[in-house]
Length: 245
Ligand code: M1P
Image (tube, rainbow, N blue to C red):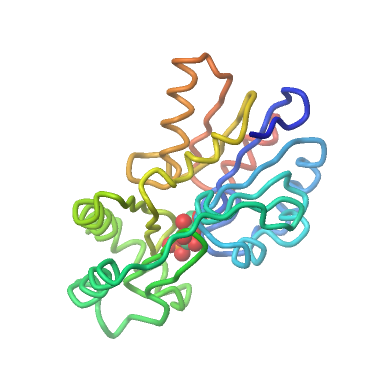
C-alpha cells in the first residue's frame, strides 16, 4: 500500500481518450502544459495499454515523471522505470478458440482487416476484430461502426458468459481488454490511500474506467473517502479542467 507524500491529493489519469486521442501521440501544446502541471503533484497513470505504447503516446518525459504507472489495467506496475509488480495471465486455448470464432463471424468486412487481432500483454489479452495494425482511417471507421452495432459490447458479454472467471471491457476505439475477474483498473485503488482525483473517458458500465468510478463511489459512501471523478470527453476536456486546478 502506498501513501504518496502526506495525504496530498493523488491525481490518477487514464491515457487513451483522456490525455491523448486513442493510440495517438499527445498534442504537443498539451504535453508542455501537462509536464509543467504535474511537477509538484503525485500523478499516477492507469491504462489498459502496455509500457511501449504508452511511452510512444505521452513521451518518455511524462511517463518517467509519473509517481507510478499501472499498465495492462494494473496488471503490470512500474515505478521509476522498474517493473515492480506483475500478474500472470496466459491465453488459454479455449479462450483463443472463442476469439477466433469472433473473427470468423464478425460482420466487419473481411477485406478491411489487418494483423494483430490477439495481443498478449502482461496480465491481459487484447482482442481486436479489425486488427491492431490497422491504419488510422480504418481505426476510426471501425469505432463509428462499433458505436452503432456494439460488437465489442456483445463480445465482452459472450466472453464473460462463457468464462465466468474472466472479465472483458471496452477500452479504446477498436479493441477489448480481457483479464481474470477483478483484475481490472479498480485494483489500483488497493495501493493508493488518501484523497484521489480521477480522470477517465470510459466511465460507463462496460467501459474499462468503470471499475475505478464504481469503487471510488463505494468508498466515498461507505468510508467517506475524499474523491473527485472527472468523466471527460477527450484530452481537450481534461486540459480545460486541469487549468482550474
Ligand atoms: O487504454 C485504453 C485502450 O487503448 C487501446 O485501445 P484501442 O487500441 O482499442 O483504441 C488499447 O491499448 C487498449 O488495450 C486500452 O485499454
